[in-house]
Length: 300
Image 1 (tube, rainbow, N blue to C red):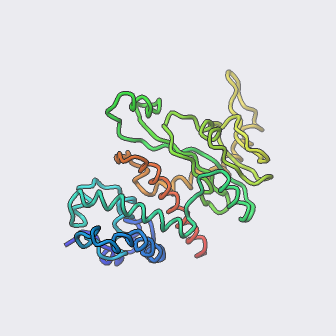
Image 2: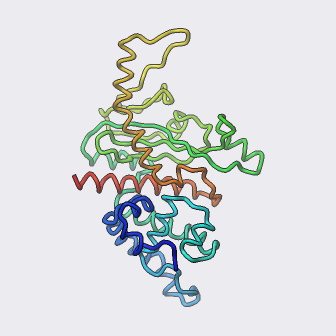
Image 3: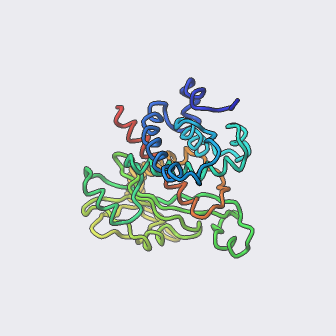
């Protein structure tokens, strides 16, 4: 008997939320889209008898979605995941990558996936209600690579930590992630990432950031950031007060990043080594945050 399944977990709503990051109602809404994407993803295999095989271990859409959300939210070792769902470790590994792709497709279809390209960001934001924005970087520690050159590339420069990094822009009012940068090595400066990727925002809007973006500008956008204390000097009381006001607005982006990191796959040391999976993971967790925050805002 499986230790975990959708049918058993949904009986305890608090535990279900802890295992998936979604309420049962949010899960059911996403599952309808997830099932459509699963059918599309497997359509070619069903048409071609040569691509057949053993019957699926997870027989329902609910159990498939529960499996991948459980993995993202709790991030167990694959052996533990396999034992919990009564399968082998190799089967669990295969399902992780297959279902991650289907989950990404489903979140794209719900409109929750944050744009990556600057033109797409601007195109989407110009259709939305005007608001201010906040920008920050988020870092994820990874397992130290065995290759010395790769170690040096991913070394973050602090505490013998090897890391990867993304920049995020969110709305101040709706707390939705509006832009997600590519995944870069942890030592790359926040400003340099933005210099390379050039995110765009509607003209006349205001974007709050921190001193990690010192000197960065977006054309037509008012950049608001705290003033850095001068070397061998002190800030005036007025400057300190202004910094506190900026921080009180900018704290929204910290709450958004905290929402993304409800999924422990982007909070714990990242162990997966498949190429580009690290980028897919942050993309999916940002989309899950958008999906949750939109649904909960609509509920009030």
